[in-house]
Each structure stands twice: as C-alpha cells, then as structure tokens.
Image 1 (cartoon, rainbow, N blue to C red):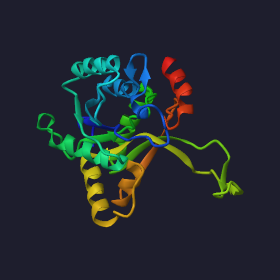
Image 2: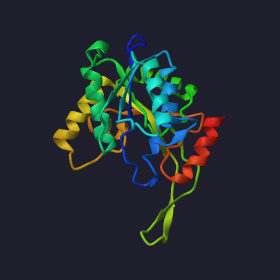
Image 3: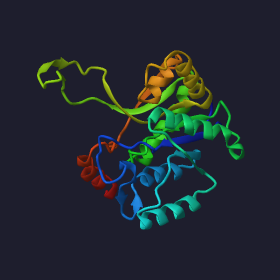
Image 4: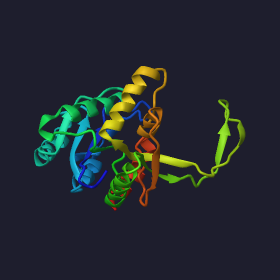
Length: 246
C-alpha cells in the first residue's frame, strides 16, 4: 500500500441516540447555525488526502436555518460528498455507507483503496490527528493491518456490580480508549462484513477494529494528541462546544 492509493471516509450519523434523550438526535444538535456533525465532516473534507466521503444518514429539514447551511455545505463539496440512507444500528449504517461507496461509479473505488470510518457524533476531530491516522494507515497497510485512533486509559478503572457495589480494580496496563477514525482497506472491510454475516451474526461489533478482527485483520493503535470526545449524553455538550470554540 502506498500513498497513491486513495482514502475514503464513511460517516455513520443515523442513530437515534437513545442515551442522549435530547430534543433531536445528538448528531443534529445546533452549533453556530449548523448541525454539529458538520464540524467533523468539515475537518475531513479539508484534508487533501481524502478523495470522498459517504455520509450515512438522512439530514433533517428542520430547523430551517440549519438545513439551509447544510444545503450550502453539500453544494460546496458536491463532488466529494455522497449522502445515503443509514440504519438504526451503527454497524449496519457503516455497511450501507460501504455499499454506497463501492457502487458510486463516478469514484471508481478499488479494493486496495483505504477506507476510514468516523462517528458523526465526534465533531472535535483535529486535523493533526486525522493526518496521523491517514499516515499510519498507509504504513499499516504494508503489513495488511488496520488502524484505530485512541489514547491510553489514564483513569483508575473499577469493576462494579449491577447494584453499584465495587468489585475490584482493573489493571489498566495496555488498555486504550477507542475512538475514531478506524479503518483498513476497502477490500478488508468488505470481507470482514462477509465473515460477520456468515459466521458471527449473533455478535454486534461496536467498532471497525472488532469487525476486522473477526476476519483475522489486526489493527494498529494511533494515539490522539487532541481531545476527541463522543457526544453521548446531554452533559457532554458544554465540553464539546468549548472544544469547538477553541
């Protein structure tokens, strides 16, 4: 794998966000007259290594002000941005995005191309971390490996029972907090979905590294240098707004 191979992105942003319990799905919360998911999308599209992005969701038409910004955004990047329907579960949204990517004839996507998946609910991805993931993916692909952005766990971890009783302390040595982007080659991710459907349908992988591992593909951890939190609960919004403002 060399840098001559292109990099594609899939952004799943169709989930209902049951834990968020907000007035709208978390990825469509407003931030400065735009849907918050567009901030991460903007960072990705600003990178010249990225050939194109598939957004797996249905963007709402309300509020009107946010929708108008989205239409302008979509027009600006129309040659590198494809929108397709997502699904309730993340894994099936990514699969829908992957299928749309492969079927988009104008892009002529190859199995050898790289594909990275980034959560629409992580709008704070930095350009520096993005480039680091891309560079490390090119290197990892020389040995047929994938990549994952994340960082080593620094907090003390406790095992806790359902009734709140602390059962013990977990050794954090070697433990990382996974985030996104994650990915491998288009061919590897496609093959991993096939293995999942044929052999592991009782399991629901929560990220691409877990899915790739089902097909025997190892991944390399890339340490993030900037905060990259996921919008999960309403309490996450103040921190995310602060990071986006700065």
